Length: 110
Length: 113
Image (spheres, helix red, strand yellow):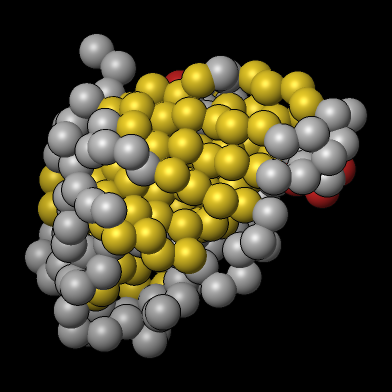
């Protein structure tokens, strides 16, 4: 499985945008880029996913580099409730299991 | 409305005493997964079912078994829990395909005394 690299932790001020980077230099052409987050004492929850084009939903935006070797999850206005571990995960088109890396622990300060 | 339900939320068992964790889903998804998450670590896939087909991860200990009697329910059996099996156990479901979303339950935290 292709691996991802994320910073261990990041910090943001409340109501500011947050850009969470992910490197995936060995991504294959059919791998989807998924982002999940896990709030304290909860199960992971889906945030967003994409293949080649940038994606937007009500939670976040996903910016995918043209060569697909990196991507960035964008939270437009961080709130205290966004403090969580964010996981960037690649899934092959034919597969479905998630191979979690260490993720980025996001701290949001008032 | 709860979509993936795990019971109980907390389970205490004794060393070596078999324990069963349960998961149910209202999404009618083909695939059900069990993950183990130890403290300060990422979730680790133990096994999954694609319909009735069981798929075990290569490094999942034999101590861990699973049953899926129907589409809605899946069970995790730990035959002889050791202290190292204390963890959060997460159940998830999805349709088939790399672009499909996985829906997770709240987890069952297992304590082994």
